[in-house]
Length: 292
Image 1 (cartoon, rainbow, N blue to C red):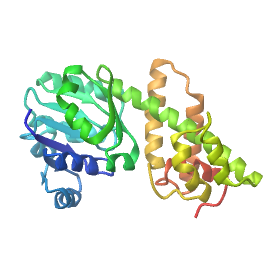
Image 2 (spheres, rainbow, N blue to C red):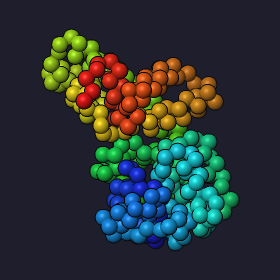
Image 3 (cartoon, one colour):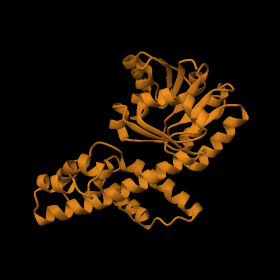
Image 4 (cartoon, rainbow, N blue to C red):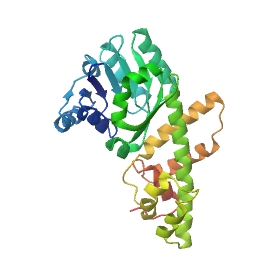
């Protein structure tokens, strides 16, 4: 394959992801709804910017999309200015957006009609993972398609894996978010209890993080949670969007998600405190009133 790529969406994830591809030697053309962000990316990485998604995709062999939600994806894929307007048979569309499995299947069918290959490929690892090329990528599609884009995935991630047919990547990401929410809920309650009990967090976390209670969230978020520092990281608004996607899918497949539903409402309480853009570890703000 040639090295011409397009990357649609210069948010906190897409901006560094596209940057890694450009630095790895690929010729990347970017598009962002706010043109100034795309121009800034070009100043930083030396790539190119386009005025529409279609223009960005015109000569690209692989088009990556990383935007906000289902409707955002549709807005940059379909129509005269969408990427599919200029994608040729044999090219590949990769959607890194955390979206619904239904959308992934819809996109897969739309791509197939014009001979374009499709992969749904949501990511986990947050802004830090994107910036440090340490993302985990969960994919739905065909193995033959994955093999074509594997070198590009390796540039942005430390793990990528095919989960099954189109839509499976999004389903895997739902599982990921369900598990993260549960861990953060338990960690929030545990740390709030420890604070009320007068424990010293340093020896406490040093001890329990090495046992079966240990987690990435404990290692990376316990100190900031104890301090009431939430002005960073993966926003509550985005987590509620993701949990909503998972709960909607559960209503279709019959899965029971009572804990997830409860945590979603806890995040609604955080939003009511003004924490829409706080990190997801801000669940603790409901239990201990010491946010700075």
